[in-house]
Length: 127
Image (cartoon, rainbow, N blue to C red; front, side, top):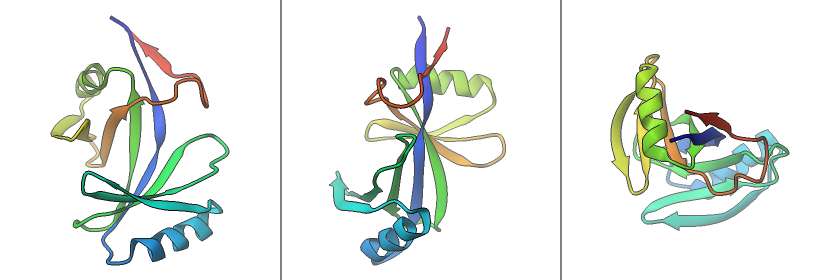
């Protein structure tokens, strides 16, 4: 059965005690105004709003070294994770409702649920 996926956006993981200061910096650097802090089941995020391509860009408070990771959104995250495994990625763990994966190059990324397929560029369709 076919599924769809596309780049959802970028998450700026920040090992910091002040997520608001981190959001102000990255919002200013990227020209995207910070939104309100959101607690998603213990994960603290501040979205950086008004991206012209409708990408989700957010600052996330983390307890690992700071880094940037991308999210791929899909209407079937298990099928997308399996497709990416065939390309050489590894599933690292399932967290809440998304897969944390690692590319063959060592980069971490997440496969998340697609929320607004009607916004932004059309998703890729995979058989």
